[in-house]
Length: 428
Ligand SMILES: Cc1cc2nc3c(=O)[nH]c(=O)nc-3n(C[C@H](O)[C@H](O)[C@H](O)COP(=O)(O)OP(=O)(O)OC[C@H]3O[C@@H](n4cnc5c(N)ncnc54)[C@H](O)[C@@H]3O)c2cc1C
Image (cartoon, rainbow, N blue to C red):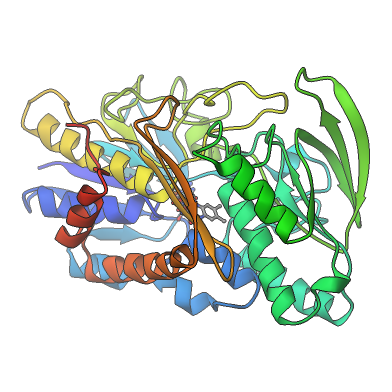
């Protein structure tokens, strides 16, 4: 009998627990360990931040759903991993032994890399908001409600080293739509400040016509932008940005004034993971082989935002490669197959497709992209805009939450529909 421990119950960890339970004989034990006792659907945080969703609609208690599938759950943070002894230490000092460990801890939000940025409760300076966590989105909404009484300039974007650009664009468009609905948009100058070398780069070197389509969208919505933006510090109501040229030389110094700001931070690995000798790269992201297995420890696998992926290309201001929901689930499916094979004494063969599929809401419309594979040149490379994307994103939220409540990882209709689009979880 083996004990498989999944560290992190997020977009990757929860489906992985269900999928492993479906695949493994019942004598094998599965335990999920997570910092909080609830799951949050991170992609809906932009809606929470403008009050289009409340917290209950995008979170659910983990324990009852895992219990129904006979999966153990411990709602505590892991503070240390002894990878040699295959044992975790939890926040209360308790220990937990494992035969296989699946690390799915998502990111540590590196607010401290830009002085003044990020929520105080998450180690930041308090002058910009975040939407990476549902608590952050709620804090934005609290300030947004006050802001609506006396509006002013807004700055939205992504910090140097960020990898998650889609949600920054999405949030800028959602805020724009919300302000227009409230007939307040004319009182709010908006600036999009991004470390990307050009609008629509998305950490992917662009996808299809993303550059011209997103530029046109920002222009159509009266938003100014600063690209190659190295944000160096934030003070109350002021963002200091050094804009670089294509060679990395200073082009212009900006002091951008704002009344409200949301900037996505760079990501690092969480402390307990980053501290394990030889497990991670210098930013604490887990180094894995093509089978999602740690390069240093044969019984550790990892998937999701916490794995190390090299940037698609070098950019004047550092940018990272995004890890999107479907890509993360494809990594998890590969892990489940490889653990099953390892238990049977067979070599690992399953490789996730890592297809980048993303739906970004724009309030009244939306933009979708598919990049297969992630690094150009690609077999599938499209970026499309339309109201159908807004509807698809709403459906994605409902569908994912329902999937977690039902306890299935990849229902047969998902497999069929994605298959029709040529999008599969595993490389054949
Ligand atoms: C605002 C935003 C919007 C996004 N929107 C989309 C989208 O629309 N579509 C899309 O495809 N992708 C989207 N993404 C990208 C990606 O899908 C999400 O970031 C996703 O949540 C990542 O999944 P994950 O499982 O890697 O990490 P997470 O979902 O963040 O889960 C990590 C879990 O690990 C737990 N954890 C962390 N440290 C520990 C510890 N020490 N011990 C125990 N547990 C721990 C955390 O509590 C958390 O529950 C978005 C990202 C952001 C930030």
